[in-house]
Length: 87
Image 1 (cartoon, one colour):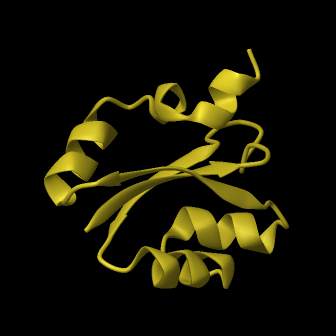
Image 2 (cartoon, rainbow, N blue to C red):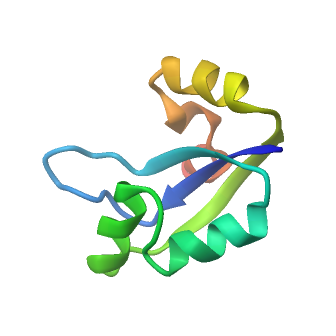
Image 3 (tube, rainbow, N blue to C red):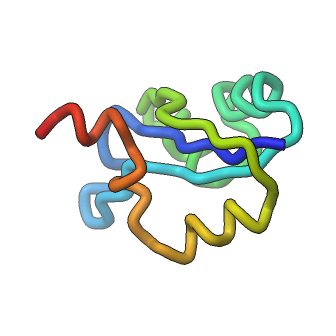
């Protein structure tokens, strides 16, 4: 089981600068394929519709408990090595 962080190449909405998505899956490769097809999470659907690409920024071995723990912190950016390389 995996928890993963997606980094979008630009904000999905200029008024709400979300640039990350945290998710959980048992099959990481299949889940990323679904996201790239615009299926699955609403945020990745909207990104795909708007032509916004994304990269898998980080992957952790873990379950839904870890996903929830990370989401509760409400700051995915600090877990993102792509964002930190831009400083």
